[in-house]
Image 1 (cartoon, rainbow, N blue to C red):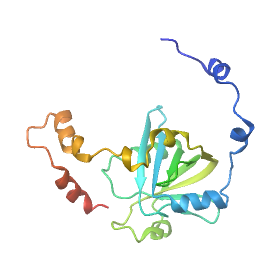
Image 2 (image 1 turned 90 degrees about the vertical axis):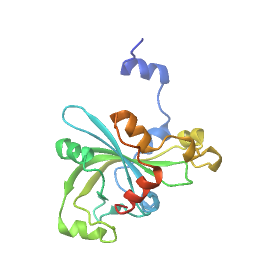
Image 3 (image 1 turned 45 degrees about the vertical axis):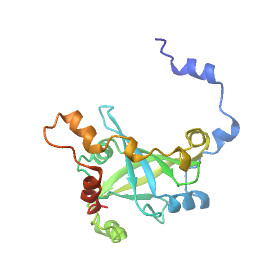
Image 4 (image 1 turned 135 degrees about the vertical axis):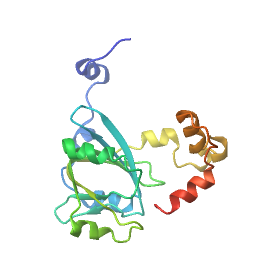
Length: 201
């Protein structure tokens, strides 16, 4: 299989448009602020010093991600499975990339930058509306901020009700994990899983 290097890729694709090159911001403007405030779902991408990568979802009510007066971004670490892959990667390298989603909006917001983890009480107290008190938060200092075009979500028709898969037509998490872990007991039902998760939401 032919493996292309960066020079070959640039020759194949040509140069990006001036608009694509110039749309990158380094600070949060009014449109980015609104996008963050309206977004209930983000994806974090991180890497450790060995080059092992991770992509992890974060979700909450619109506005669950905060913006500080000095233009940094605070992401609460809500209760999860305690793998803390993203957190340990950030602690290791201090790097992060993010994608912000708004349901019904095909454009995305991309923010790349440096990051660290804190358990500072004044920061944690910004998230007292969380059902379970958070233990830490991610502080992001943006380096690159830009709106990502709508093509990927338009192609996928992600928000189209007609494109949604019926949950009953797909194996439950319990069924998949039973097969993957070779578990002997019965698979956890979808209802039981949802009920178990409710206390952590």
